[in-house]
Structures are given as structure tokens and as C-alpha cells.
Amino acid sequence: MELVFVSHNPHKIEEISEILGQGFSLKGLGDLPCHEDIPEPHETLEDNALEKARYVNRKFGVDCFADDTGLEVEALDGLPGVHSARYAGEAKDSEANIEKLLKNLEGEENRKARFRTVIALILNGREYLFEEVVNGTIARQKAGTKGFGYDPVFVPNGYQTTFAQMPLHEKNRISHRGRAIQKLAAFLKSLPGT
Ligand code: IMP
Image (cartoon, rainbow, N blue to C red; front, side, top):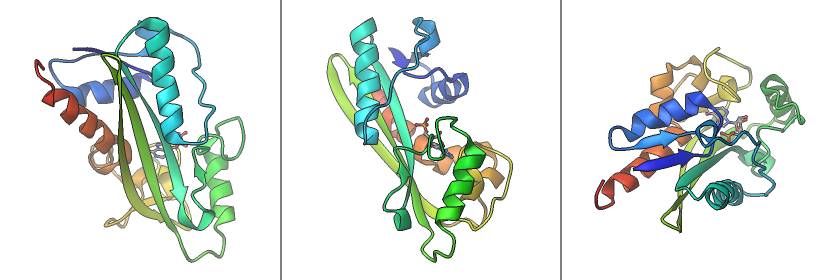
């Protein structure tokens, strides 16, 4: 089965290819080729993921899927959520995002947070949504150098370390995105003829 993942990020494409395994030919936006930055203008992860998938499906006529992820912090009423990448501004600067987050949580005892990933799939003209979360807490200071984004301050429940202190394979096994992709893969593999 040929599928396009609506992403310019070769690391994400490779990671997902590996989870999907044999029987799937996964292409990225660069392979179409599509070099545009596809907008994410909406206030929910679901709407953004669907919009990205619909855009590529309409423009290129291909089966495809898109993802959107946010960090939802309970004491901040779910922020930064859909605004996670640009929490501290348009520069998408992870250091600045973390600084802003820690400042906004100063003196706050409730550190509960979750990462949530939504995947929108368009296959043979039908739309499907998949969602996974990983629950955890926001640490009081940064720890670790692996990963990206908010990894240095996110401690998943059941662990003493942040995502940024974990080997990548361990993070992928338990993470929001890793598990959402596994859900998508299980669905695709359950289809007749795959
Ligand atoms: P995206 O939808 O995957 O581009 O994620 C949006 C933003 O959420 C990213 O720019 C990061 O700030 C944050 N984010 C998403 N996934 C992760 C993760 O696995 N670890 C840390 N931060 C993440």
C-alpha cells in the first residue's frame, strides 16, 4: 500500500516507516514533491490534522495521513496545547517555550500534564482519526539532552526520568506519537489485502 505522510521531517518519516513495516511504501511531502509549509490554523489538534491531510489529498489525489501533537498542562487549563510549538513566539524556540512553561508553573503544586497526538488518515476518500496520550508531570527544572521540544521537563508517569533522559527507543515505545502510530499501523494491517 502506498501512503503519504504529511510531513517534511525525514526522521519522523523513517520512524513511522519502521513501525509500519513491510507491505507499506511510505512517502513524505518531499517525494510528491510538495515543498509548501502546510498551515495549521485551527484551535484543536483534530482540526489541524484533518486540514493537513485534506489539503494534500485534494491537491495530489493521494491516500495520506497527518499528525498534530500538543502538551496539555492541567494547571494551565490545557495550554500550551495546540499552540505548543509557538508557545513563546513564532520562532518555535524550544528553550524559550520551556522557560515560559516553567515560569507559568512557578509555585504551582499541580504539575500534571499530558502529551496528546491526533492522526488524521484519508484512505479511499474516507476520513479516520486516531488519538493517543501519555500522562505525566512537568519537572521543576530541565534534565537530559535527548529528544526535542518539551522532553527535558516531561516526566511520564511510572518513571523517575524525563523523556530527554531516556533512550529514544524507550520513549517511542511509550510516547503519545509512538503509540498513535502503532494504532494507525494496527488499523492499516487489519484491512483486507494488506
Ligand atoms: P508536532 O505536531 O509534532 O509538530 O508538535 C508540536 C509541538 O509540540 C512541537 O513543536 C513540540 O514543541 C511539542 N512536541 C510534540 N511532540 C513532542 C515530544 O515528543 N516531546 C516534546 N515535545 C513535543
